[in-house]
Image (cartoon, rainbow, N blue to C red; front, side, top):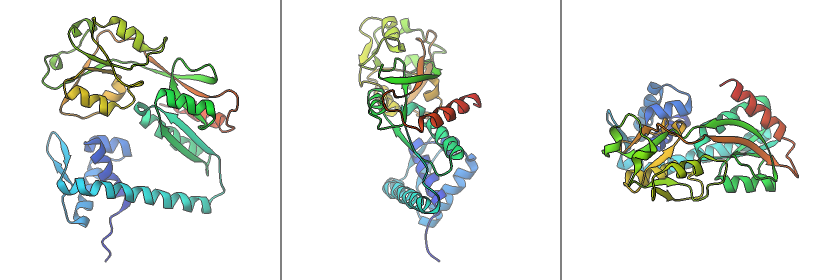
Length: 298
């Protein structure tokens, strides 16, 4: 019998490896945690090697897992390309709908894509993770159907409000004296550096947060702080602390970081769906309707 693994088992392994958590992988894939564990176990038996080292508190790649993760990702990519090509032959071509979105909304963007494909069979939905500036430029140029942006939105774009997200957690290193606190006020951060985006447009939460921080606390980094994983690496290295939404904190499992509630969070992030005013994509209406319906049924 040919020694070939099931694609579902490969996907489960890759997802657990990326999230470092069986429970987080289960939520991401819409499966139960036992189903994820069984899938990884089947893959290990087929390949004849242990891929993940498990303990009651952490999950990490074994040496074999480290070596096989990249080929596993390639298998999924090639399988996706095969199915996409087959779909183009099997069904009439539908519209291509491209959505740019911030990385913290990855799960929400995936739900939008699923709803769109149900509403419009044959549609090709492309998701593109991008920072605020890049996403706004793509939308203005008509390179994407629309983008999810934080307010304020550039004037050359048409936008509709979607939802708000509160920056209500502070990431601190595990073992730090602040890690055991039940809640933190910004005044308690005297002498501590706090990661904030270098670009802080008026009307967003960052100017208010910086104004409320003790002197010499802000530690500007990237334009948008769009990569939570990289920012959390700076936290774990004790370089600075990181304010972030519970939307992100609740999906992260890192033994080297703790998330403490903020007692005085800044004004919320206001997200909008935006598209080119000059040359709107005909599919933007379908996208906007799908997003609004998804928000109404959350």
